[in-house]
Image (cartoon, rainbow, N blue to C red; front, side, top):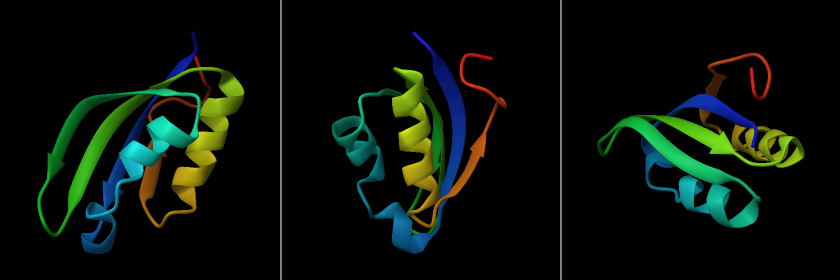
Length: 79
């Protein structure tokens, strides 16, 4: 199954939001937390999204609309 690694960083407002929960419930992707460092004011997470290509693309596009800083570790799904 295709997967992509993504780095996500969040400021104070976004740290308190359940965006990882939303990814796993609103999109047909499996979310695997690879590394993370989160406190009350700032956090970053390296996650792996696994699932159908269309769902990974939808989930990534949604993340980019949330105000989070999103960086893909590779240029293409499954690369």
